[in-house]
Image (cartoon, rainbow, N blue to C red):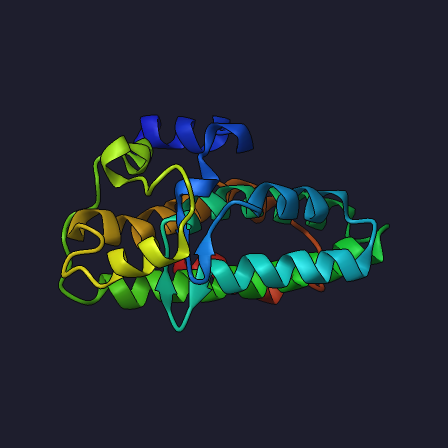
Length: 197
């Protein structure tokens, strides 16, 4: 991982990302900031379950990752570390940490499966994925988006592979925090994630 990409990942804020212009499995990432806030607060189990479901199903579908996925993984990584830190005192955090570890295992499997196939090189920098040429329209129009999906090259090859490559990088950036986790309950899942990072 380059220092520039790691610095970008560690310093990115939710407000820096034009979520409404990033594709997901079921539309755009417009509501991602609200879902992240719900997960971060960890104070309402039903709300956490609902937000987690919305995020995970939009970020990964049938092993396909989307434009919103690598950016989402950055904030989900931070939420995971927070949930692990609070897991012994907060049962909602305990639940969330367990679920997020499963989700990251899925994301990393998607990356490794994609990496084994022939693919383009990723874009040089994580931030390149937010270049104007790659963003979708400012206003969401479901019909217009569906028409765009019918194009032969809806995502340039290097951009598409970047969805996978930088999702992996977004988890990798938090490797040291995962390595410090000492919870016996989560040790097997964390060990499995570290093994494929």
